Image (tube, rainbow, N blue to C red; front, side, top):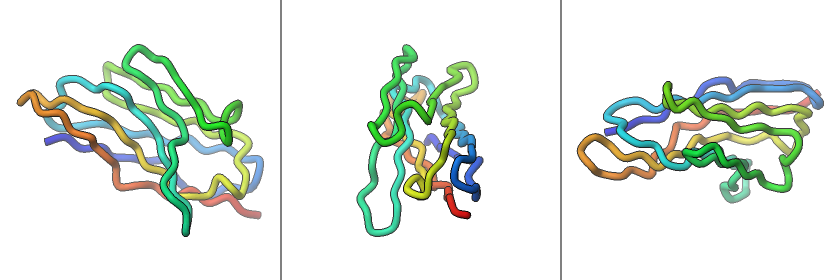
Length: 120
């Protein structure tokens, strides 16, 4: 089995910054694309940013220019640096990764979510 564990959520004022981290553990052999999603109350989960195993990144229009996704393949981690946060960025953020375990099974894995609050 594989697991994703997120950290780094919290509360900031508008214009502030937060850094989210996510680590994969367990029987990890290969990690394909890693991504961050978010879900706010009453809305569907949406893709925020993703990064391929080669380091190619893409962002939603809502966060482009403010958020940066990166990964460390040696540590099986993905990070989301969030700058110039606005109230509309408030949500539960989820880490996602497509992981192949040593058994050969592929898992579409999700973290437990971490809360980001943006308010005065």
